[in-house]
Length: 419
Image (cartoon, rainbow, N blue to C red; front, side, top):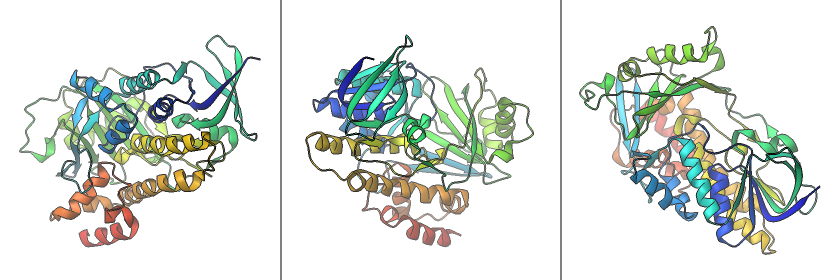
């Protein structure tokens, strides 16, 4: 069987794989990326957070994204809007506590992921699409993978270090038995892309139909605060629309399309905003997505992004966490390849988890309704709102922000004040 050798092998060419491979290749390392699918391909998680732009800049990929957006490829995004039972509130990410970009984009992941993968290839990474990892052995000094190529031929690849950026496929957690149950409740989502036909002259004087195309809109179901929706507009007149809830809340309906349309119709603001929408695409569903692992790194491999831990889509943190994991691991892998002793737990897993835990505090509070009380509080203090805006903008690793450094304690106090 044919055998090849690389400094680093990365499973998956999505955002974390692209960023990590670009950084490692620019440093002169031989990098192979193995991607089972072919790009462009559909993926969910389309609303970026401003913190992403800093991570992309570190990989030398930010300008590529800006250039594509300038050609009307991506929708400008400057914040998030929330709606609940007639109440409407906005967070402007340019009015945040943390330093760094305050704007970003809402992207169709098919084109966004391909742009990043192409950028990684231009940086020197080799990307093989249609190549599936069949087996992995990590109990030796250099991980050994068995790979199936496009023609059905098996070959081996040996790496000095292995990164799993396979997202929801979670290749290493499955193959190495690293998965463990998430503490977050099981939830189900139903989503699609629609031609939204949202009128530019949407009546901004009416909270029921207020809509800003430069912001993601999060709507709480008027009858059950545990159910929520996203509406993410794109630059081409289409939007991503989805609903999230517990699986049992969607039982008794005949199809995913019926479920999504029924629940959208049950939210008066969305019913009005999307009254002229066309629904040409299949409705997709994703359930049981919250996941965790026993550890994020070992002596010769590490897990990036969703391959490690995925929380919940409510605050669009998925891509941000994925990119952060990539920029954290790349320098440590370079040190390891240079022969240094690297404690991947302390240098990678611990700092990554600080931001993940901050996001987790907000996710838990959202479903307990506490964060909803904070968001819709009528007398929001400017400084506190700017700190919350920073976290919503993705700056969950900024230890200068009290709601990051002491997220659980500080936020519990804030919820009590707002209630």
